[in-house]
Length: 406
Image 1 (cartoon, rainbow, N blue to C red):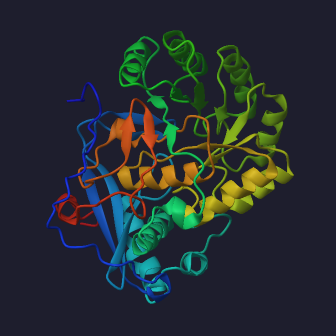
Image 2 (cartoon, rainbow, N blue to C red):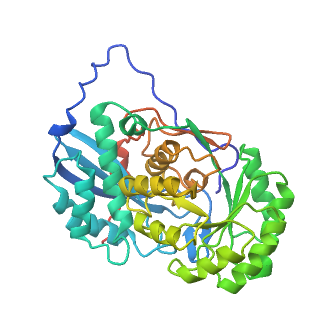
Image 3 (cartoon, one colour):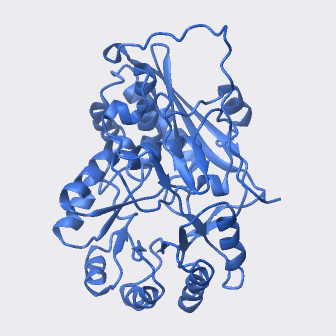
């Protein structure tokens, strides 16, 4: 049964007065990666969710996420990979085997602080080819290393980076898969939970129905920020037609309307579209953004941690966007709380001031998380605990673990 009312928010336990004193932070330069573990976990699904490529989550059916634990000299950190074959080619099975058989052996014994070296080692273990090879798997390990370093230093990632420009980010409520007549109920649910911005997945119907869905969202949320995401569903000609209609509805951005590698088409669309064209799937590696910038084929760059192979490359991509005068927006992959926290730290570091698509809480639960990200009335607060700021109950992780290779 789909939940109604406020989304559940974990609460932090009260510290006991006789708790042992916290261990002193470990020197970062002494930490050597000694173990990388993967746990494919089955998480509860609150609502169904789909994109133009197919289903992402089905209410009542567990959603599989791959959690990764990296250990170094008694310190550990956690990361997450979100297998969505409807969005990209990595599956739960491929993520587990890529990490266990290729990435983990390649980085074991390396200095945990050497994130740049780890990234180069990843590329030797699984070559990036035209773009990034196995970005979701690489991202889980990279994020876990960031969490480990923050925990070792006793500081959140923003402090570790010396960069945090905001303490909270507005989330967008996702409308996906509904018919025009069903949209009102979804929008009303989002508004009741305090969400004030909406993102609509299009490309799931024919053009006229897609437009009718967006029009229905605008009718039920007349003053709200509203943007759409086609997940590569259209051709250039249809995207131009749709962009003109969307502009009349007050849509603020047209996200990934064309196939990711249609560079020439995206340049044509940018020239003809009255709406800013935002790129997501097209921007795997920072060098992809550099190409689109040189060709003047991008208005908005979407920052997405897993798509770009983790926080190391995502920070480079965000900085390149800033330096190139390209607007930044933020998105995720229906992550559970580990992925949510990683994205919040990245987006806060770069001061993204528009609503972001971090929709995990809307669709799935994170029962493994104790003290974690605080979300109130559609606003997510950047965690202030060490590392990612999410406390993982490993016993619960092991209870939720499933053998995806069986």
